[in-house]
Every structure is written in C-alpha cells, then in structure tokens.
Image (cartoon, rainbow, N blue to C red):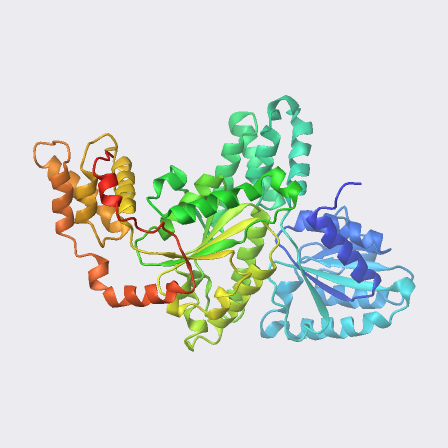
Length: 523
C-alpha cells in the first residue's frame, strides 16, 4: 500500500473530527478546488453528505447545481438557518462554506457571528443520524474571538512531492508525454514544481507545454521563482556562481559543509542519517558570511530562499504571525533548499531589548525557534549575524543549529584566496601578480575590502592607456582604504572574546610559514 500524501493525512484527520461530532472546522487554504476534493472524500468516509455554499450560488451539490430545497440560500443567514433546521432531519450533512469568512468581519458581521456561534453550540446535541457540521474555507487563519472556542483550525498543507507527481502524471497521460520524461526528466520536473500550490504547478506545466510543446524542468523552475517571489514574504536569491570555490578561505566551515552535503543522498537516507538543520555564522561584517550562504545553494544544487524577518512585521495584530506561518509553510513545501536569515540579530532585537512593538518581536522569536526545533523538512537554515551580544540566548541553544561558527578577519593564506576569487570574478584570473605582497598590504582587511581593491586597480589601469593591472595598482588601491579593523577595533575585540568559548573558528589557524609559501603563488 502506498504512503498517504500530506493532503490525504490531513483529510483523514478531518474525517476523524467529523466522526467525533466537531461542529465547526476552520480550514486555512487558498486552494479551493484541491482542498474541496479532499474534504468531500473525508466527509464521505465519515458518513456525511457534503454540499457547498458560496455567496454567488448559495447551497449547491457537488456538481454546482442548486435544487429546489436549497433555493433562497444566497444570504448566509438563510443558509445557516437551513443548516440548523436539518439537524432535526434524517441526513448527516457537511456544509463547506467558501465565503463565510467575509461575512464575519467588521461590525456588520456581528449578527452572522452570533448566529454561527449559536448554531455550533446546538449542533453537537443533534441526533447522530442527523448530525451536521460546518467547514469554513478561508485564506486567513485568524478566527473571530467569538468563535475561537468552537472552531478547530486546520492549516491545510501545500501539496507534497507525491501530489505534484499525480498532477504531472495526469498531464503526461493527457498529452501522451511518456517518451519526453525519460532518463530522470520526470523527477526533475516534479522537483522543479515542489513548493507551488496544485493550481500553480498545473499552470507552470501547462505554460511549458504551450511554449515548448514539452515539459521543461528549467522553465518550470523559473516560473516557480516568479510565483514564489510574488508572495513577497520571501526572496528567491540567485546562487553564487562557482559555489564554495568562489569563497576565499573559511576552510574549516567549507569542510564541514561538504560533509553535510552527503546527508541528502539516497544512501544517507537509507543509512538513517538525519538531515542537517543548519548553521549560525557570527562574525565581522564583510568577511564572507552572506557570500557563503549564496555559495551553499550552488554547491548543493538547491534553491536559495532569503527570509527578511523585519519585513514580515506588521502593525496589524496577527499579521506578523500569519506572515511567518506562510513563510514556514512555503519552506516546508519546497523541501530541500537553503533558507537564509540575514543579520538575524537585527530582526529579533526587539525580543531581547524590550522593544515597544507590542510583543511582535517576541512572538516572531518564539515562532522562529519553535519552527527550527520542530521542523521535519530538508531545509538547511543558514543564519548570519554581526553582533553576537544582540543574539537571543534561546537561539544559541543546541538543537536550533548544528553548529555555531565564528568568521574572523582573513588570514594571510585566505587573503590570497580572496584576492584570487576577486581577480577571477573580474576576468583577471590569468594575470600574474605578487600575491604575497598584496596579502601583506591588506593585513587587517575584511574579505569585501580586499575584493574591492580589484575594481579600484582596474580603474587606474584603464585610465593609463587601458593596460593590465599590476601588483603596484593593487597595493596602491589598498593604501587608500581605512579597514574596518581600525575603525571598529573595540567591537571586533569584544566579538573575538565572545567567540573564543562559544563558537568554532571558520578558518584554519594562521601558519608562521604562510608568507613564504604564498610568495611565489600566481593567481
């Protein structure tokens, strides 16, 4: 017997709730068609006859037809009255209400809320043979306070990989595409659409068919990027070309990441190896923390999702939590990906500094910590922070992240590596320069400060008859920089003291003979 999909598991829970005579279920979803089909199956399994209601048609059967007995039910009040009357009849009914949430808002909704509340109080006392239940479909998870004690809220999950596969298989059969999706193309097409709703996945596949007369995983993935970006709760970031090789230094961190990458293989799953949770990178600004986050996604061939916790905050009560739930739901649906919380200490600062934001920051911290602790998906969380003292202590506890790393100023060898990466980025990888001299001239520089001297040297060389850059150009460019290690020496010292006993160093320790080793190195 095949394993149940995520949606089928929730539908089984709904069936159990109906058998237990729960009078009001509040289902949070934007996917009417997909969820309604599963709710109909759940109602039938519990011995109920399902029907629909919306503000345009009133009560209808599953085919959308309105019979004479349900005439006059366009008004929600009339529909609720009819449901109450049928609790004395001979048929068990489930009423799936599509637009009910709109009738419960504002001061004008007080009458409907009272009527629905009275009804949910009376329905459990109806005879079993005439039991009635109401299922409200709503895109919002906020249940009116008057109904909170009566409603069971069900946050319907996005379709999992199996459900996406079923959507694809229907199209394959419909358009006779069996020969097009061989050699792993089917799996790639499924993976490309994971994270979309059922309707969105079908639309992406259909667009690919219209444009290319085939289902192209790359086009589907690009379309998914557009759809996900439209939500405005996360940002789909383009991974760093070259992967971890484009990040100079940080050998300890890179080695650790390469070991964790193997955990996503089928052999690792068969072995029982748990999926890695993530890492927290604390360090000096400009030392490659953000660059590393982008490089991991490239190295692991997974999407990179950036979450701006600050942007999710709202002045309206409940909106911040709703935005976070939407983010976590989307991440779980996408599956294997890298989730990047940039400068996380700033977004959560109000949770520890007594911010007068009505508890929004504290609620956000609680939601993030709970998700990080309890999540079961394959998302790898990479969080970056510049100020360790602002980090909530709860965030540093084992179990939130697999490891806490400290990213310090680059060593001599790392400065050479950063310079080489910057030269390659500007198509100067074949140019011969004295790496040792440049490394010495940039002692105390951050990685971003070292990378910045390359374009400065290019400007100088271009204005001198467009010649090639030289070691002197790079050293002269470095001489004009006042590094962060000078302007923020006290902060860097405190950060090093904090990291000495709390975090692993991301870099290999400096070697005395390093300068001799790199003297003849060409980049």
